[in-house]
Length: 310
Ligand code: UDP
Ligand code: MG
Image 1 (spheres, rainbow, N blue to C red):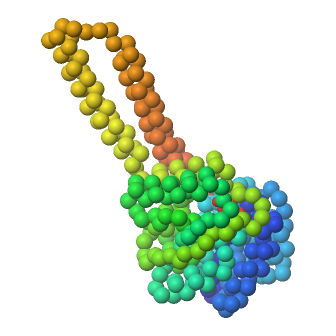
Image 2 (image 1 turned 90 degrees about the horizontal axis):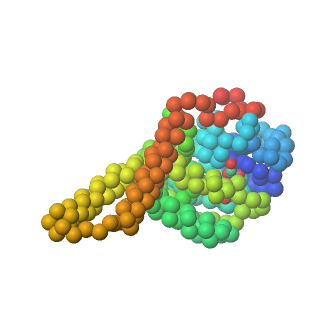
Image 3 (image 1 turned 90 degrees about the vertical axis):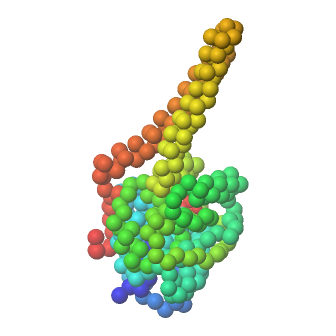
């Protein structure tokens, strides 16, 4: 039986795969466990798939899943988990930002009776100021507005037990936020700290657009707070409007003194218009996700794979 599966989502990583493979193999040899490495090629436009296939030829523990197009990092991880067989499964990035050597510590900690051991970033090297600051605030806000404990400063680099993988398979949501799903599942979870390194080579596949979409997926999947905000502001604004109304009636009827209040009318119209548009937008974000769930399309399409337990 396979002891450990390593799931590696890859998108345009031709210059990193060999380095990653060599480091992974060293680590796993040291651990002395039976293993499989699952590379999920997420519609790369470079030579990534050829390099993976070369590895497949020389090492029969190397598995690959080749997608029909780019489905995104979270879906690539999901496919790897779906087809993995290991008793424990490691999720790791292909760009060597997650040091493979840490897997030993993750695995050892797991043996103390944990189903999930995630790697928590102590510091992050070589990433833009904007990326670090947005990530920092995103995780802190998410923590505030969700009812589950999503750990801060943590990516998907972690080791999880087969039990957790089996539950994840029963959560086939389209707008995936895997780290949130894993927190939601529960069991015993802990972490190991590490310093996140710079990307070995190549460029990030996470554009700002993908990051915004990912952040919205995380929030909408685990929190109804933005919707509640609409209700709360509705009450607050109505309250204010009621006071203004009383004031207007009082000056008009009792004091018999009124001016044509163009400025106050136009500001309240603009203000209310803005608030309404924002909340229609927020409701729209939720509805569009409901829409994509009800279509029940497959999460991903596999073009080719050497794994037969589909
Ligand atoms: N990745 C992927 N599909 C994508 C974008 C990225 O499978 O659409 C992979 C990528 O090859 C890497 C991991 O996901 O192994 C993390 O992506 P990246 O390093 O680009 O993100 P960052 O570390 O900059 O957040
Ligand atoms: Mg990276």
